[in-house]
Length: 223
Length: 284
Image 1: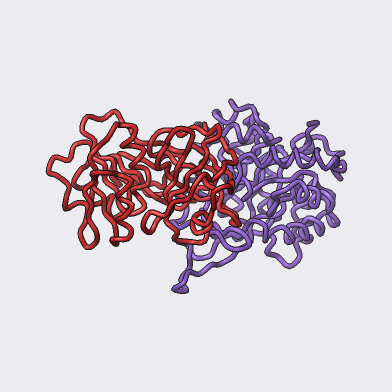
Image 2 (image 1 turned 90 degrees about the vertical axis):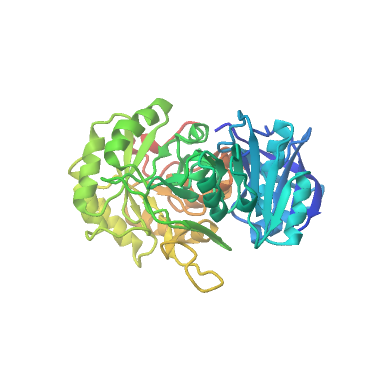
């Protein structure tokens, strides 16, 4: 485990449609590679919450949070000047040694894509959201093609999609992997620890349960 | 200072060796005779007073554990406790027999109380007795808090040959979602975290008064003060569980809190048993 745990300060909180972007002072934390994640202390809660790194501007780490439960709502209520413990980077990120990257994101699954685009110096992207308000987060990826339900990201997937790097809900990843079998897929799962201790975040791969935190969250083979 | 271990199933020393090296001994996730995939997700839920889990003893089975996992654990050079589980007295005896000749295994903890799998039909004492026939290593019996008279269980496992007792395992609980369906894939789970702390204290106190065995206390420990509470009622070592999920470096923080408090933990109540206390005592 190369992760560090450090108490870092919130520099800013920005509302982006239905989501909240939290900017933290980086401290001595390493941003890791795109697709890796961090465990963020959720104020007042017993367990931290896993979040993909969204962007890594100089001296900062940013995370995009969807307030769907008590922990994520507590995170979205953080104010500039507050500080929380952050552990990371954790897990396996995307392999960015690719020729024709195509980023695909669904909902909060767009979170790791801006860091990929920044690292690659830009990449085409297809994003899907469940409402126009959620779709405002597409501003994080200028130039991306955007669909809103009932339209799906797979409708915009070209016949020869190139090197697909995708993150989103399981049905979307399943659909993408059928059309792009070599796609790198970042899966989502609730995690209690994020570093292989609890066995709470398993997903089924090849008939076995694997821990998404240490074997993923980016997996290349289809489920 | 009181020895600090991890609770079984709350740390993977191979995934996080630097975390395990903060402990006085590493306790493995429970090993069973055959490989187990474990229970279907969702496997855990955060509740107001703690955490509910239903992992279901996911493990590679004793064959792969002995050939692939143990050698890598040995290389870490951390005192090693292996947690053993099963579904019959024969299961416990057979896994213990496999561990008997492995020098790197210092102590065996018998998981007699997992709330997330079917239980063996035998009593805890019968399982300890079966394990005792196949190993000379120190045997700790991990007991459930979900019994009316845990002291009686403690006396029974002592009579059956246990060298120590681990108290407590999680306690079975159920959580429902907004649609009144179980949150966890398997239904009920094991409840851990802060809500377990007073239950653990009561169990340790009752057993310390009933038996002449060292006790590893655990259940909701998250601070140095929690450690001292368990020691005050008779624990000779303390294990960290759910707190490790939130903070991998909890042991370091807790040691620092104990030092800052200037409190040297009292001597273990049963320090006269060197073969056992060697496993749970440190001069740190």
